[in-house]
Picture 1 (spheres, rainbow, N blue to C red):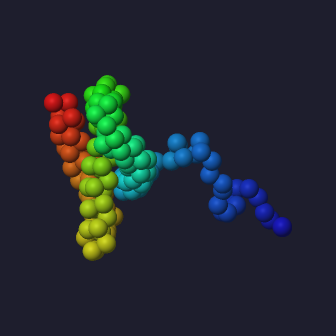
Picture 2: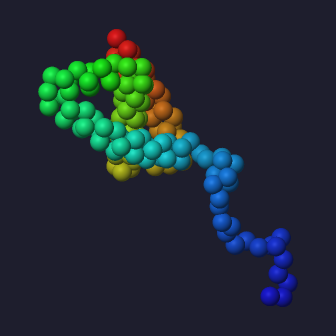
Length: 134
């Protein structure tokens, strides 16, 4: 290759995991990635919730085990975490549905929708935490 140098090489480079920590993602990208993470957390959490439901319905002893586990400090944190994932995933899902209908497809609209998603989710998560801690 005549005249080739690394300076004018415009080919894409491989991105490593450490590079992802350096990138500065725009807020709509953070909202979209968070939506996927919340969906995965719900997917995993539903398995434990179904196991807890099955255990609680099996006998009185199973019911007492489940209520004790949910009432423990770790159980409360997990419950609030799953409710937080549910709240965020719900609000972000509504945002995605609105975008499917053509609302907020511009860059400014996407930024506003992402900020609104984070705000509404924070309010719902706060209310859910108060509900669980009562």
